[in-house]
Structure formats: C-alpha cells, structure tokens
Image 1: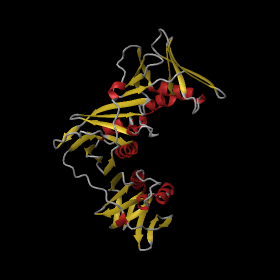
Image 2: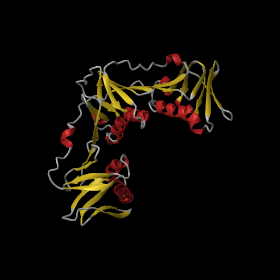
Image 3: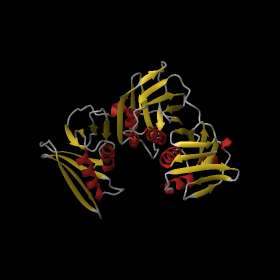
Length: 370
C-alpha cells in the first residue's frame, strides 16, 4: 500500500477513529487504526470491541498502490501532531510501515491487518434519518450532563427517545439534567425498538465529533443491543448501555411558583466563572441571589477568599436565593451561543432551577445546601 494525503484531512479522520481506541485494551490488535486504500479512496477503521467506526477520506488522497495497513495509535498520533508538512505519505513493505514527507521520515513495525476485526457496513433498509446539525446540537447539549463516574450505570450515556417524527436526547447524572428534542423522519417504515436506547457517552462523543456542523442527513438504526449510525463519510456502531433510565419527564419543574427571568449567556457565564475563582473541589457552591434589580453570585471558601459578582436583571422584588454547583451553570452556558439569551425559572433555595432556550433546550439544576 502507498498513499499520499493532505495532512489536515487525514489527521482529522485518524484522530476521530483513534478516539474509539482504548489504551487499556488487553488486545494489542485494538490499539491500531486500520487503513484500507482501494479505488481512489482511503478508509480508517478502529474498534475496542464494544464500539467501532469506519471513516472514509476522499478527494484529498492519492492511492498509488492499493492495500491495507495497521497504524499503531500511540506512535502515529505523535507523528501527526508534530508533522509540519502539507502532505503525508504512508507506504508499507515487508519490513514495516514508512511514514514520510520531504523533511521527515519514520519507520514503524507492521502488524497483520488480516487479524483486525471487520466493521460491519450499514445495510439496514429501515431506519431513522435526522439532520446532522440537529443531531449534533442535541448530543452536544446533553452528553456533558451524563454520569462520567458511572455511579449509576444507566446514567453513563445519553438516552435517545425515537418517535415517528421526533428525537429526544436526555443526559443526567442525578444532580442536573439536560434535554432537547428535534425533528426526524422514518425510512422504510421503521419503528422504534421497544427497549431502552442509552448510548454510551464515549460513543456519543465520537458521533458528535464525526458529524461536526454538517447539515447532511444522519441515519440511525437501533438493533437489539446496539445502535448503528451512518453519516456521509462514516459508519459507527456501539453497544447500548443496559439498565432502566429514570422517568426524566418528572424532573422538569412545572412552574408552580417563583420567577422567570431573561438572562444573557455572556454575562452569566462570565459571572459564574469569576465567582468560582475562590471555590475548590470540596466547596463548589456559588450562592445566587435574585433581587433589587441584580443577580448576585457569591462564594466564600476558607483559606482562599471571597467573591461577589453582580449583573443587572429585571427582577426587583423580594429576594430569592439558591446555591448551585458552579460547574453545572457553566456547562450550560458553554454549549450555547455566547450572544444569546435564555430563561431561568427559580422558585427557592430547595427547589430545582429550570433553564430554557427558544429552540427547545431544557436544563434542570438541583440546588445545593448552603
């Protein structure tokens, strides 16, 4: 095999594929990305046994000699990060793999690509279709709220509720919850699975990164214990998380009382980051006080100091207070356009806060004790 590729495009595809690879895998074969050059295109495949991807690079690649090769993720990642030429050449021979440009030349050992498991193609004829931009937004705005500590196994992924005309994504760790809904279409009379579709957060990150900001359609097929995703240039599969997802609809406050404010993302994001300067791992709470025409964000940590940040708001009546983990409010702001507005419903110190946007994004934060 011998290929020449634009460095940027090849690197982007390689790092997306490599993100599937687990460095702790007991199987050495899984610590590689398989490159297949055929018919003027190059595909890169990776798997950890539980999830996998095959991503295609074309238009910026010249295939001089067809063939396959296994690129070790660790060494190849370092080469691509430091390679400073516009074009990279990868060539295999009996002695190994050569990676080179005009100024750089590397030789790596070659494992047998025939031992690498195949990534099954997307051959389903009945599936859901959703805009890549819509799906990417749903995943980006929910995956950060999942339980990365795996204290509750079923919360270690994004729950996807697939209906005939809509897709709902939900992420929660039990202390905050993010939810958003978007439109989709069914193809071939596809009907949703009767089981629970919880996609592992690690796979969600790969899917979101693969989609990017493209408007191209993305196809989703849910099988018995896995989900398959097809984009314009990639096929991704992953096993589903087992377990029962909590009744997320019951978490959303029904606006029984309190206030609703229109707040600017930029001011709140800046304010919460400033207030959090004097917090630490043991004390992450920031006190929020709504009243007298201002939102006060205050923190006080022994041996560090105090902070007080104020931003103007429209509410000037009886003060309402609550304490939140600064990370949770910051995470919400981080996935929004910095120039947009959002609504915040606050009832009191012991009630959850509901944050929403005009495009249907819902985010619930549970309060902390002062």
